[in-house]
Image 1 (spheres, helix red, strand yellow):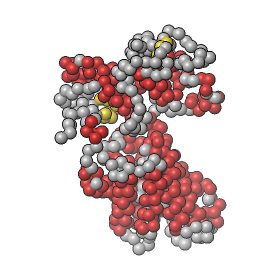
Image 2 (tube, one colour; image 1 turned 135 degrees about the vertical axis):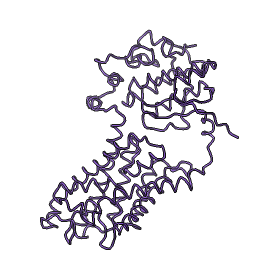
Image 3 (cartoon, one colour; image 1 turned 180 degrees about the vertical axis):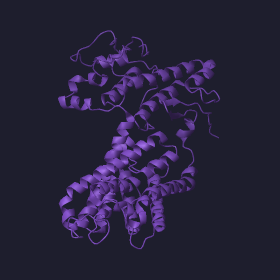
Image 4 (spheres, helix red, strand yellow; image 1 turned 90 degrees about the horizontal axis):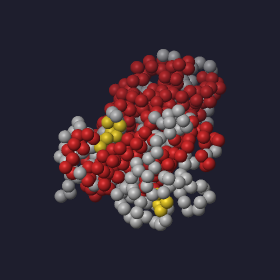
Amino acid sequence: MCQRDLHQKRCLCEGGGDDRTLGVFLLKMMKDVELEEAQILIFWSEKKKCNNQSNKRDNQKSFQSAVKPSKKVRPVSRSPALCSSVFFKHIFSSLGMKMPSKMNYSPLLHVHSPPPQPCHKVCDVEYSSSMKGQTVLSQAERAVLCGAPPPAASGPALKDQLWPEESSGMERLLRKCHIRNQLVRECMAECLGVYVLILFGCGSVAQVTTTEDKKGQYLSINLGFALGVTFGVFVSRGVSGAHLNPAVSLSLCVLGRHPWLKLPFYVFFQVLGAFLAAATVGLQYYDAIQTYSGGVLTVTGPTATAGIFSTYPADYLSVWGGVVDQVIGTAALLLCVLALGDRRNSPLPDGAQPVLVGAAVLVIGIAMGSNSGYALNPARDFGPRLFTYIAGWGVDVFKAGSGWWWVPIVAPCVGALLGTLIYELMIEVHHPPTAAELQTSCLEVTEGKMGLEFGGPECVKPA
């Protein structure tokens, strides 16, 4: 039987084995340029500590103090399978993904099922690709599976050594553009998602306005924003979760589902995406705007064009009436978003959530749009407003509507918190715990300033 120790030479068996399960999983992640070798080594080191503890219960207290010294908890037993589960949770969490509840993986290095024969020592011999049925290891694969030293810092990156025969010149070029910092990737995804939202939304307003309702009407504006939200979510949901809205990010931080440290970065890039999209619409419709306005860019009046980009109150609406309008609209939006994302409240098929979030925006626009244009999103309003200020509309974009500009920034945040509180108190907290939650309640994976750590809460046993 093969020796199953990542840091010793051992057999890698043809057709499978626990080591191969681990190796294929990690190498696939690194091939997709999602994980760095340093991250994997950290996770693996923590897993080894967990494995050792499962065999040495008398050292449970010292294990917990070494892994999470700031939290005093009752010692709990950690099985090898649980250690493996946490290892995978670390991997998925570092990718910003949720580990599938029914993921097909072996309890790594602990389930000693008899391997298929024959068994070859691939760490001692390099096989050629012509050897049928055998595992061919690249230098990087051998580094992971055989415990060889990682590539030198000055040498080629690990990701560039994986499956070189399968990489085209363009793929290698694109890999060089890869950004490893997870926060930067998330911020870029938020920026692009909001860009798509505003490009379609403000673009629809520009078409309706400059053609004087000949190429669209109010409903087409609602559809533009609704579909903009849908495709913006599709663009960014796999990387950042597709907040696309500072009010949504704030609510998730309050719920503990998003780190507070990331909030200012998300907000900045959301505003940046909205600004860039407004600039794109302004460039695309430059001639139409000049013709419609007679070359005079105004915020109010019969040929006003600032409303193409940002929201302004109706003539009859007071500032405080606008605050109420935005609070109610954003609270309704968050109720819908949280309900659609609640897996314990009628889970949706994959791909349905972005479409239904767009539908929620559509119905809010139809029902609540006449007062002030249903901004519901500080980035959606402030980014384009900043563009109009720079592009020639001037300071009037901040003076119009009795200083209206702050309402679409503050009121949606208040409304988002209100909607979140209502949903949590009336729906979320009343869900009974699932069987999976009861089984894994002895383990907690938390995210701290220095990254993911093992937690050690007291075990909550089912009644």
